[in-house]
Image (cartoon, rainbow, N blue to C red; front, side, top):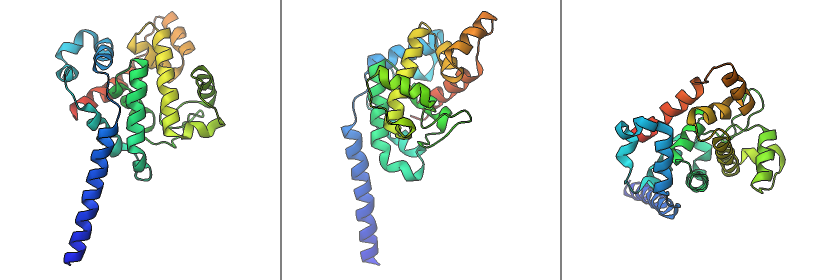
Length: 216
């Protein structure tokens, strides 16, 4: 019995050490980038939002790692640190709040790397192969067909790059580039020409975005 307890203790300590070591090795969030994007997304609501409470908060990397670990399906939990790492790195590269990227991932695939959508979307950020291939060329990533999108790290790199491209195309207007991510930029422009502002998808993403901050 004592031997069993000792073995379990060693396993638990080993897992705890590994998680702690992983969090220490994560890239650092660029706070200024994160805050600037949060202000852009929330506008006048920022100062009264829970997001503003973390303006000078350090150590959010550990929370992102724990959030990713919690949401990844069991068979993919061993990839938690690499997924958290790419979310942090690519968010900083493209001027995005990593919690925003996680909100998009949660809504698109519930963090399932092999999720598929009704019109051919694949992976964590539910990209169509045509979009993935196009973005791969833009960011000079090797494209190996649809299986590229089944790699969560590559999928997130392509998805964040696409979000950044849409953000620039729609002049940093969060509601519009979020809608475009869901329905395509042409459909958003068609809706705007009819004086219709797409709001359902952006609203759902922003609810998840705020919920992630509430869970810190």
